[in-house]
Amino acid sequence: MSRFNIAIVGGGLVGASLALALQAGAKARGWKIVLIEPFAPGETYQPSYDARSSALSFGARRIYERLGVWQQISRRAEPILQIQVSDRGRFGATRLSAIEEGVPALGYVVENAWLGQCLWAGLDRDVVSWRVPAEVRSMQPLADGYRLTLADETELECDLAVLADGGRSSLREQLGIGVRQTPYDQSALIANITPSEAHCGQAFERFTDDGPMALLPLPDNRCALVWTRRGNDTQRLAELDDRSFLEELQGVFGYRLGNLRQVGARHVYPLALVEAEEQVRSHLVILGNAAHSLHPIAGQGFNLSLRDADALAETLLDSDAALGDLATLQIYRERQRADQQLTVGFSDKVTRLFGSTQSAVTTGRNLGLLGLDLLPTAKRWFARQAMGLGTRTDV
Image (cartoon, rainbow, N blue to C red):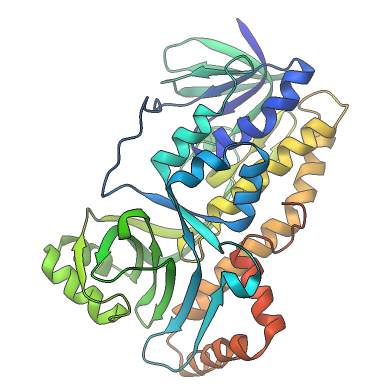
């Protein structure tokens, strides 16, 4: 039976990022890492109008620069030069600018397929073994690690298992790790849009009585749309013909980018704040959406998970204890606790504040948006959250 020092279950963006963050130090220590992923990465990148994307904070860029993959990622990373935050039908608004913050961009929007290919291409196959396509069916705790059984009945053992298999992790449930789930009574509609005018690196966060929306800049003058609505209204929007959908979106978003000319495939996802009740056990770490799944409107979820992965790698490589040592894993957990609490709280409160239709709340949030423009210190704090720098000075 094969034995590895670290087994990463889930080779998506978070799992692959962790492998990258570990591999140089792992090579120096003679560690063997295995990355287990059900979907094989493509040999070549295939552009697609409908490609899903992620918003990377400026802090994420710094991490990927340190890991040596940012130059490749940046080839198809659209910079966010300005973020406009507004409340439909009300006077409150604020603008965040990369120039004002003294950075080349507030963040970047990257297609997931391109980002994943760049991460996998950066892996050292002498250190990180691939089991692809492969799926872990069960995990059995041992005195000195875990035994993993794959779908093809093969088994392997590891000193440390990292579970990064997504928000609907069946393995997390199998291990008896509960979750705290707070539904938002909203669903998100995801699609790509083409406007008639150039987006010029602008991102828009627009709050309405029916729910918030975000429009983020993509390469080829496309925009990534995240539109959240209550109840079943998102499904109604998804089923409209393209012309009717664009007309309704135009009525809510306005003409900041001219006429909205094209919409791609639409996908709908129910939204909830989900947090695992445990993130570490002896010889086990829960990471990524399996640990915490956030509302997408603030664009914080993946960036928080990337910072978690970076902190986990650094904690493991700084420790002289055996891999899987619970005290070491608890150091990682405490190190990230403040970042997680602040980011989850920021995302949740922004969602609830701008989702409320109560007159007192709407008046208060409009004054708050005006205050951000009038108070540089408050605006700077808000910008640092958006850039993924809220509690970290080392990224």
